[in-house]
Image (cartoon, rainbow, N blue to C red):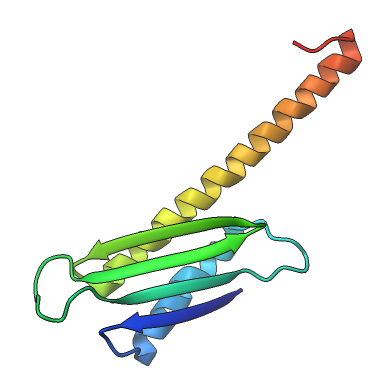
Length: 123
């Protein structure tokens, strides 16, 4: 999995880059990708404004495409690291929700086929 980081109104330091890599590498286990597809995470981090010093000034946004479906998570917090943590949590929630939905639809279809084979008619 590749992580491409873009910054806005801040300088990308090694500490920030390693923190983002560490937090977002664990998302790969929630993605169900094709064998020939390598997921790419596009991460935008930075300050929303330069003239404010307090409040939700730091923003983190992650965009990823898995099997043709787009997933996006955005967070604005007082701390950059908290925004990265929050955006990771949101992205994991979206990915697991989508994965569970696909699994449920597959099982529902398999149950309908089983009923069709067993009784000769669908519910």
